Amino acid sequence: MRITTWNVNSLTARLQHVLDWTAANPVDVLCLQELKLTDDKFPLMELQAHGYEHCAVFGQKTYNGVAIMSRHPLRDVVKNIVNFADEHSRVITATVETPAGEIRVVNGYFVNGQAPGTDKFEYKMSWLRGLRDYLRDELDRHPRLVLLGDFNITPEDRDSWDPVGLRETIHHTTEERDHFRKLVELGLCDSFRLFEQPEKSFSWWDYRMLGYQKNRGLRIDHILVSEGIKPLVKACTIDRVPRKWKQPSDHAPVTLELG
DNA sequence: ATGTCGTCTGGGAGACGA
Image (tube, rainbow, N blue to C red; front, side):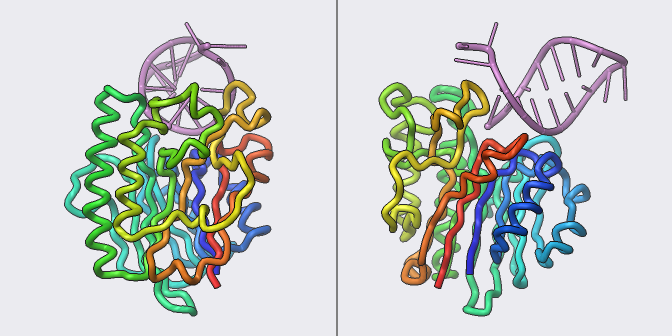
């Protein structure tokens, strides 16, 4: 049983990459962010023909947009954060009915936040508070839960290519990292850090300045698991291969393997 | 390093967000 998160930076632009990657990596569940398309433009037929029979989509024109694609049935789909009014399509939640039992999957495209001191940063902070309140309730009801997506937060200095030069800039601030820690304190665990990992493991590289070629990246795409899932975790890996393809997304897919 | 990419409007190149 494998579940993947991938910010595709436009599903229209990246459909062929998604099809090629899932053909080589037929994961059970693929959670996407930054679809940048409306629900009616979601390429449902192509994805179903490639094995993702069950799709829950929460799209938006131009920006944002998230989806859960699954080989197993989905139910109890929730769009956005309950009790947090948001203009953006950033969160979709569903229960996946896997052969090994149900898993509650919360797929988020977290607010970028631009820079500390801006309105967008304040939006990021209130959004993160809303998400935490929502997850507290979800965890009460669903002991087997996975929270994954583009968090737009480096949890620690080792998750950044330049933690000194970028100290207290966006993705690195103490406030953002406090929010990440508070999510963990709800009873979640960063599955990537359950295992020994290569140094300088990142999931995003800027398109500019030869970011990928110089491995100037950040680890901002995460898969957090609840206590009910933690004993099942066999691996968490970042696949850099599609980042090397022509016209790639700036993010790499991150995959959780459960036994 | 105003560095790149994707999408929008409007009917071309600039704005915006990341």
